Length: 127
Image (cartoon, rainbow, N blue to C red; front, side, top):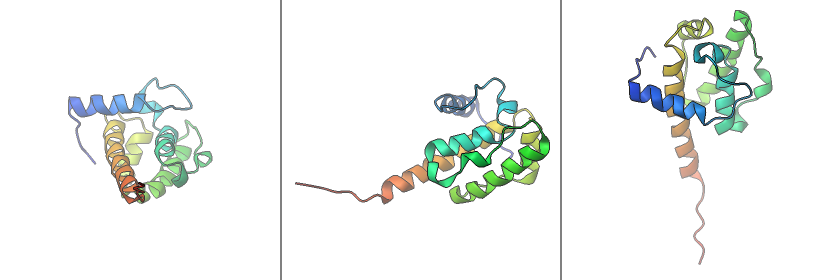
C-alpha cells in the first residue's frame, strides 16, 4: 500500500475524516490514528455491526497499538482489506505520510461495501 496520494486525494480524505464524529479531537493525524482507535471508530460509524469498539484501547504504548491493529485487520478482512505488518509498524510509529493512504483505501473499501449493502436490499414497489 505504498501509494502516494495526489493533492486532491489527500484533500478528499481529510474532508471525509472531518465529517466523522470521533471520541476525541484530531490534532495531529499521524499520532491520532496510530493506536487504531479512531480507525475503529470510522468502521463503527459506517458498519456498527462488524466491530466492537470496546475492544480497542486508547494507548501510547506500542504493544497495545499493535494489538489494536491486529484486531482491525480481522475486521478489515470483512471489507476485503488488509494492512501489512510493515505498514502497521509505520502507523504505530506515527511515520509521516503513512496513515492518509491507509484511510484513503479504507474509504474506498467502505464505499464499496456500502454500495453492495444498498444494492442487496430488497426493493418494494407498491401501488
